[in-house]
Amino acid sequence: MLPRLISGLSEIAPGHDALICDVWGVVHDGRRHHAAAANALYRFKDKHGPVVLLTNAPRVPAEVQVQCTSYGLPPDCYDAIVSSGGSAREELARQSVDGTLPLYYIGPDRDLPMIAGLDIARVPVEEAAVALAIGLRDDMTETPDNYAGELQAMQARGLVMLCANPDLVVHRGERLV
Image 1 (tube, one colour):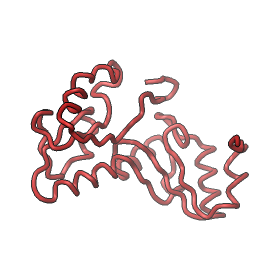
Image 2 (image 1 turned 30 degrees about the horizontal axis):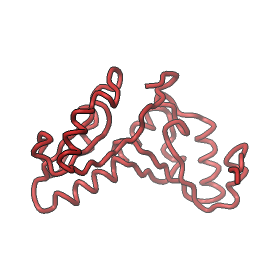
Image 3 (image 1 turned 60 degrees about the vertical axis):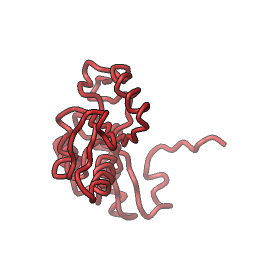
Image 4 (image 1 turned 90 degrees about the vertical axis):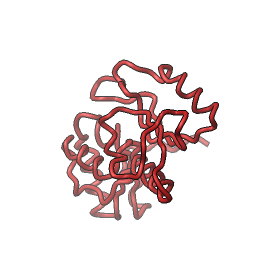
């Protein structure tokens, strides 16, 4: 059976009492929000029920909200944000309740706030109890192929890796990174 194509949210909204909406590419493009999407979220909230933004951004929900607001998305067009970064942080906090968690980190320094305040020690692969992949360290010049050696070392140790952002490519405005 083929999926049903719709012309917009208003076509199916009356049959639902809550909305879970993706963020990147739907409500913003990585530079500015989409006004039509914000208006659709407002209409859904007003007529049908709560709106939850769901994203695989490697940031906690509060950081996602700041980012969305900086792109012009009105914070009152949704009720809550759930992020993979928030979920990964919760899992790392759970694993570190019995002491400092030795963590191997793959990602840019700009995303380190996701683990700030947790009882974590960043260590080399050989000493890690778990790995966290947030993204490429430099997404303007690197590709996943640049990490083959690190991934092989993790695999050889049987190291569990949390991946807080599985995107291989992402739009930033008109640019595909």
